[in-house]
Image 1 (spheres, rainbow, N blue to C red):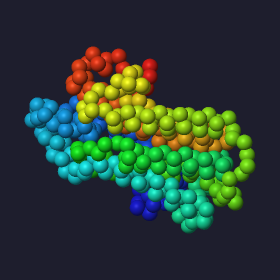
Image 2: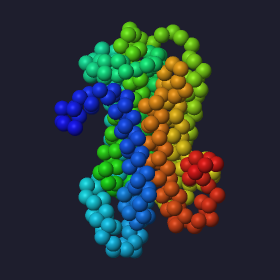
Image 3: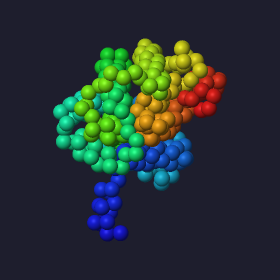
Length: 311
């Protein structure tokens, strides 16, 4: 296939499909890493408190060529864990940017809308577009507030690839919350219509606000813990990472709120749920293993990692 054919094929792919491809390929990459030997996996996935605590174990993991190569690769491009704040700044900035584009009929949004609308069989309503954008903005603002006023700064570092993946996720998701509403955006006067919320929207918003509040409580509780203590209050009695559980529910609820007419969920956002679940699931597994090593297996043996009754 020639370069011109590839460009023509790429031009035929709509924006929502590009977002879906990003989520699926990113999730597949995380799953592939999770299938590697433990000595390799820990080097590729760890960050935060576990990264410094596992340094000693890396030295005992062996001197295999692959381990050495992976250790060298992950040591290149280390960035401060505090760079997590960039994700939330980016999310809030993107929310503000798309709001301005929406209200002023900006050329960038109109370009995406034109490319998406022609292939869209059913569309979100304009109210769903505004509601999904509002909920995503609410999540970004709260996470930024938490990082500035609630969470304690971590001196640890993370691999720059983790940082790039997180930034790409928030950038992509701020498009995903409205892209399947392109037909409505194109034909609407772009103002909120005085209509009663549908049953799906009520369910989605209720799920979102509940998980949004519970995640804040989890993060607030973690911020008050003594360093390297085992969380064991509230939802932490039953789950190793309930804040991850809340994160998954947040994006599931967004997929429900943003479901186009005749669909149970928004296909683009359900792909985001796939990535979030896989990514955080791998991290939750590592967290439970670390807790077991630090505090004893009996302390975490009866807890689910992230999904009650399943995982």
